[in-house]
Image (cartoon, rainbow, N blue to C red; front, side, top):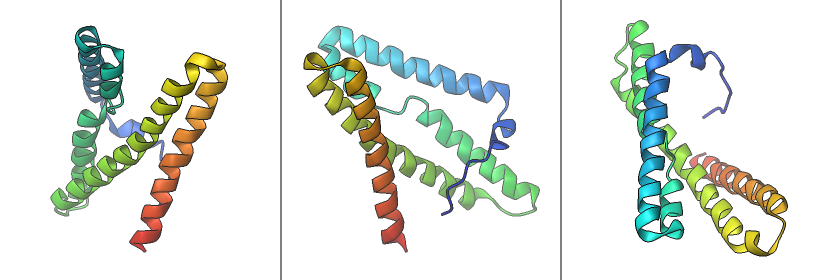
Length: 141
């Protein structure tokens, strides 16, 4: 898989798809708030680690990829499913990194500079997620 940034993809999404992502993110955040009220912030934090827009994103990735193939006269169902699976894999890799981010913040913010801890935690997230991606790519080949 070749990793690339394609801003043209932003034009593919319709305004209501962005609204859908926003609503999903808001609902998951609200659910985490309700969980936090009932069971405390430590438990709620676990639910905030869930990629809030992933449910909407995965369905939209599948839909757009399928449409792209159909415009070329091909059956795009399997490609759409594969693209959504790749998106899910990327979300899982990012979530592992996010877990490291949360652990670092939880352990070190109380006794250290919050800005420094957030910078270190963000670097840890990045290094963890990219390392997992690199290991997967090497194993895949």
